[in-house]
Amino acid sequence: MEAATGSRILPQMNLRNLNHNSSSLCPQARLPPTFCNVTKASVALNSNSNDKKINAVGGLSLNEKIGVLLLNLGGPETLQDVQPFLFNLFADPDIIRLPRLFRFLQQPLAQLISVLRAPKSKEGYAAIGGGSPLRKITDEQANALKLALNAKEVPANVYVAMRYWYPFTEEAVHQIKRDGITRLVVLPLYPQYSISTTGSSVRILRDMFRDDTYLSRLPVAIIQSWYQREGYIKSMADLIEKELQIFPNPEEAMIFFSAHGVPVSYVEDAGDPYKDQMEECIFLIMKELKSRGINNNHTLAYQSRVGPVQWLKPYTDEVLVELGQKGVKSLLAVPVSFVSEHIETLEEIDMEYKHLALESGITNWGRVPALNCTSSFITDLADAVIEALPSAMAMSTSNTASEEVDNDIFGYAAKLFFGSILAFVLLLSPKMLSAFRNNGL
Ligand SMILES: C=CC1=C(C)c2cc3[nH]c(cc4nc(cc5[nH]c(cc1n2)c(C)c5CCC(=O)O)C(CCC(=O)O)=C4C)c(C)c3C=C
Ligand SMILES: [Fe+2]
Image (cartoon, rainbow, N blue to C red):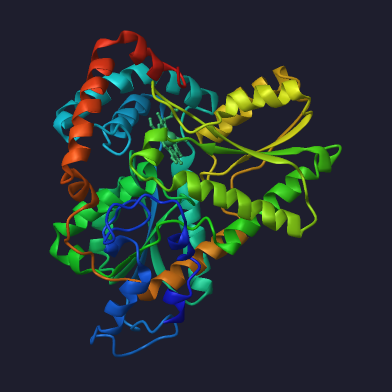
């Protein structure tokens, strides 16, 4: 079982500094073991007496019908879609994290915030052509991945499951059932794990799978994060190296990693490993660049904050101004949380941040494109799928992470207390609500 135990999808298990309350939970974010430990999962496969005919891919049966489920966020395709898309996003308890007692406020709050936010979002989508390119690019990535898997003699169907817009996760899962898939790999298109992205999509998958006879028996492997994979790191380094060549003095350009932010409370209270994984990811990309003789200065900042709470710092807009004031003249922006072009690269970075940087004294601006269908990257995703396949096992029906956390009386009391304050602030303070109209306060 070399593919499962030696897999490069496992090293994230070694991350320090993660917040675990229970040894039976997954280090990524208090998930049940089924969702994280592919090494354990491989035991289940070995004990499957139906696997008589064995093929080259980690001892799989030749009769397997393999599926790959790509998880992504989704985006509005037209300006009319923007408010309902935002409603779906803010109605997600992994995005607006209310304590249980206040969950009844989730939908009314989502309605309110989506209506308040829609004008600002619409402006952004209008500036990039009237809608998100995410569906088109994700479909292209799915096709490219299918071809890459075929080239490696692993025929598979590749499905796209969006969290907040079409094609919704439910549609993809129904298609998987209709196609009679017998083994599934779940691959989030987020290199780093966050409760708000991969965590949220996996939570709804788990709910769907638990309640369905066919799905609850389907062997599934979930790749929680893959930012450490050599193929991904090298592909990112290739893009950076190429883009640096465009600067008049490439060695003088500051490499500016701009990651999507999350509220600080995700990391500090809920144990989101996102920040640790992001920092390690940047370290690995810089190490790869150094091995190629590229020793530019670099920095990491967080973009796209929404609402009246503290997000991960430093903030991209503030750092850009500071760098300009300090005399940095050349800057290469590198979006690093996401592998497709989307509103936050095409509008926020290419328009808003570029404008701010030039205004602050930076004269040479560059931006690394998103990986999209870069062939070395797609080939690496295909390898990740193949390595994960042998470890697929049926999803367990054990308690969900949130149920376990909610059993903690002190956590519950704290949630009640902070929840009351949050509800008060959100519902009674129009000033705070206005924060959702713009980025941050
Ligand atoms: C309010 C909370 C939000 C959290 C937490 C969050 C985390 C998060 N998001 C991405 C990637 C994407 N976000 C996108 C759109 C988007 N995200 C939020 C809010 C949060 N994101 C909003 C309100 C929106 C809508 C756009 C806007 O109004 O600013 C998208 C889709 C972009 C598209 O082209 O349609 C992506 C992708 C990550 C990686 C992340 C946490 C790590
Ligand atoms: Fe987002």
